[in-house]
Image (cartoon, rainbow, N blue to C red; front, side, top):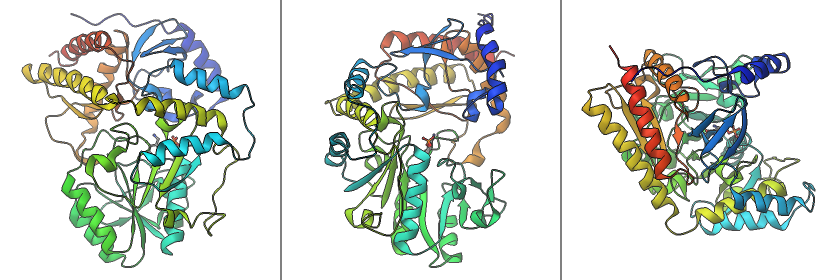
Length: 436
Ligand code: PMP
């Protein structure tokens, strides 16, 4: 096998030239610009099941899934029909609707980690609000976050670690005041000492520790059970709230997300992506007691013109109804496991420095022979290999998110046929990547 010719990108390139005159970098969210891969983003025209088609008519088996929400695949008939049905009656009222109750009931009745919830319109909003709630509830200001965890783009969370074990955060975006970053303490994952030291150094000042249920925004950084247990205990001991940001893992690794995966109860949990079925939704939830601090019951203000929007609620209801069918996660996770196991077997047999990290229906390809648990463990030079892999896969009709730090998602719409085809493409592409 050799390199395949590049797919045609004429129409995408044309659209990109135009979009660059309208949007910074030609896009409405940075990673879409394909900066770390081919350089010209593919403009997508339609999706159906596990397939997407770009403006040039190229067809791909999609593993990006709109960055996670599409656990049922593209253009799912049940979601589409429910959304259209609801839209016949108007699209937004800024007043309560029965649909919000319906989605809330599906969540709360089947999730032992939240008693009351609040819907938002994005994951960023959900997490930002959860942080405000933790601060309002505890009366403390500082938060601890982990290097390598992404929690959306609100100011106090766009912060990365400086040098040294326990440091004040350093902003990772222009425009975030240093004084905001000073309220965010950033520590490495998988390091119990760093947790203890942070709590000791900032005694009685920590409102919350926030962690991605299973960190999946900087590679897939699988944490040990006893580390998360340690974190839970440290929060309780120090009267700090533990926040699981389950925007990716919620309803993905199982209906009850990472919390159930570990069997550990966070104090506040945030969801997004899947609960909106592809429409803009986020959510945070906690015990009734903690949620009682949210306005209008309590003093923590949080609002939204389109929060609980009926169209988005409809998509969420249709999605979660499918996820609650018996065997849904078992089938999806099993299918994913067979898929990634055979890729790993292939790479191992060929002695390729390549590992697939996986949980549930999430996978991450890493060009390494090490166990990776922290952001620091990732060798940035290995991304050169991802770039080749990404291009070779596009040329074979396989679409991965355009960055080697991003995870991939298997959906219910991927059948054995597409997964077989994808495996063969990956084998060929890996042979090329590792060609001497
Ligand atoms: N938290 C996590 C864990 C996420 O993965 C994301 C988005 N990828 C967000 C928060 C922010 O969500 P949104 O992009 O919907 O604002």
